[in-house]
Image (cartoon, rainbow, N blue to C red; front, top):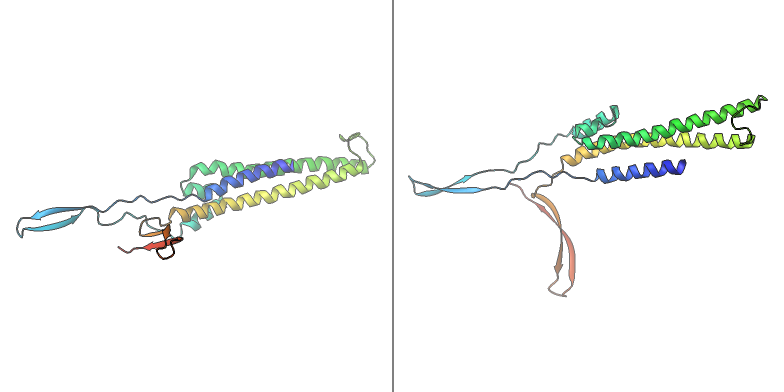
Length: 206
């Protein structure tokens, strides 16, 4: 059961990791100019069709708001970021941890109750003929360990839900226009005729 839980949680973490790396590119419009003749002065007047790039306003509190909403109610931060398709993943992840916690807690109580009855001198528990007293003690330890592990993983997934909302809100406002860019390049050196790999940073002010 523990292996099944770990495999399920690992798969969900991979989904979150892949999802946390997404970037939303801002839509850009190119500057266009149109030349029109000036009849009075016989000069050409440059009329800009779109004088500036369309940029989204940056809200510095947006990541904090998204994290707060996800802390209050898992999935609410994802809804605030308009990533509605992540909400089922959040609830599936947290729900899986809660399910395994409840199941292990139930099994732990069953074994514990049977062990207590044996200590009281009764021999009518459901594990008669299947588990010895030592077996019941080991089963209690196993189910208690699995219960605690399930609870820890559930809290971890809850925290991951908050982190995902916060990071996603940052990436939604990430500047990806042409005025700020990093571009790798490969160049042949003219002196020794060897290849050089580098990284170019471009920064422009309009």
